[in-house]
Image (cartoon, rainbow, N blue to C red):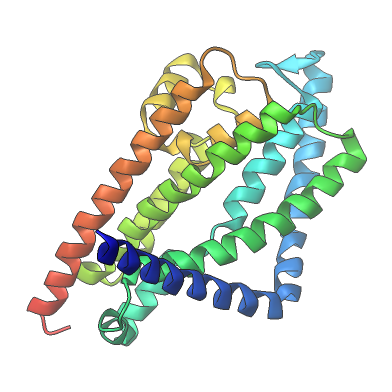
Length: 273
């Protein structure tokens, strides 16, 4: 048991070291991250104009339970999260096309875990910058969010699980490159589903009831909608049941990723990759 624990800790230190290396590398190019946030500012400014007119025309203070400031803070969180996700599919696809994956697979660490270490480092830095700059814009226009410590705590509880779900599903799509090489079409479909059924562009409460029910059955709402909602609104009912459901989707996505990875590596071996 002690030997197994030491082996586990050694592996953890290995990936923690990879995380630190990637984080330092990204800090060296922090100007690039700042420039990318200009697109986020443009998107949020367009949303402020669009939703400002929408609330004015309808004459309502709230739409689906969201006031205008709440709506803008919700969209700030969802856009910040989505834009913080690194381009994992493109990287794995390029590794397969260039043949680099054959070298990477024989290195003394897990292929998936190594990618996750790099993914996590980049995500944390991107998200911090996005929320800081996007939040500053919305703060200037609408004031601070109506957020208590409980909402922030729930956001920090839901966000890591959302990250794990998104990474797992995205890695599943990326691993299809072990068979097809070109997987951008699969990724495009997944991204479009996140934009709609995932609540990226609109809170799910605004959709027709049938679409909202469908969205809550599928895993996409666990990626973006749930952490954003937990931060911006006070959830009714038992919020922890949503978190347990999110944990369930995380376990499912991890299991699916494991199956696809093992079969993908076997496929590369059979084809001489």
